[in-house]
Length: 132
Image (spheres, rainbow, N blue to C red):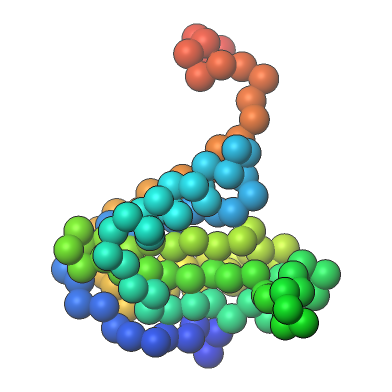
């Protein structure tokens, strides 16, 4: 399964934190947070997940006659000991896709904690008392 991981570098980090952001969530929160981190910190891409098993061909974009597949990329920030993962939401093989993220986090980066950032619509405000 690791043949679906395409490494371009091996970052030198010590038990970093992993931040995961998904594209196309409510208000594009995950996308906006990860874009902010990637653009404001000195990050370098180091690994991509091959999209072939996870995204339909109908999900591609064509720009200047070139097919642009959905991207699932890991970035490293050495200064802040941080790994950022930004990805489109896979349409197929969710379990396999999440296992690839876990493999990179555990086997290659030895992350100590993971934060997933995203937004979703709820009919109740987050300040409302919980029902038991």
